[in-house]
Image 1 (cartoon, helix red, strand yellow):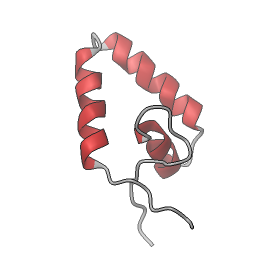
Image 2: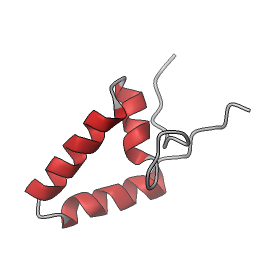
Image 3: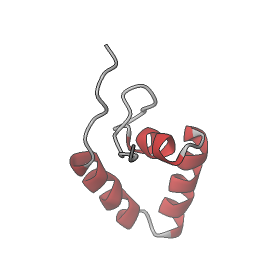
Image 4: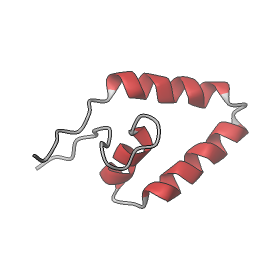
Amino acid sequence: MAKTLYRSQTKKILGGVCGGLAGYLDTDVNVVRLLFVGATLLTAVLPMVIFYLIAWIIVPMEKSSG
């Protein structure tokens, strides 16, 4: 079965994009968040903020298990 990227409902702080990406990559969500913050600081903030907002709009929300 192919992996699909979803925004996380359980591992989210703002929109669940980093939590969903961590689930897709099978890694710890805190590592993804730290990498995202580091990339944000290195790219002068605006490009990564735009990326996050676009991902928040485009990536579908994970289906609830209940």
